[in-house]
Image (tube, rainbow, N blue to C red; front, side, top):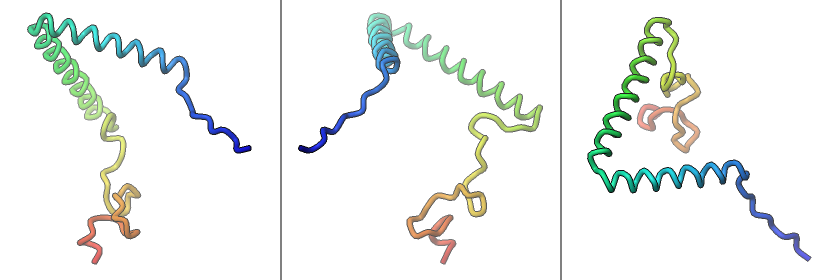
Length: 98
């Protein structure tokens, strides 16, 4: 008799979280459909908040000299260990390794 394959399932807390996020998304979509002007204000608020967080991040990075956020990793390139693979075992752009 062949062993039955068990399909991995997500943890209960994650499934509950996903359902709650889905319900909130649907509720917000209905509110936006009912009042499109609200959607404009929500977009303005989200953009302002994102710009505020990004500005604070850059300000702290400039004052302290320590990069935060998206600049935690060095840029990809030869010698950094972050160069994209070309599939041939070489690092860097394929034309530069010839």
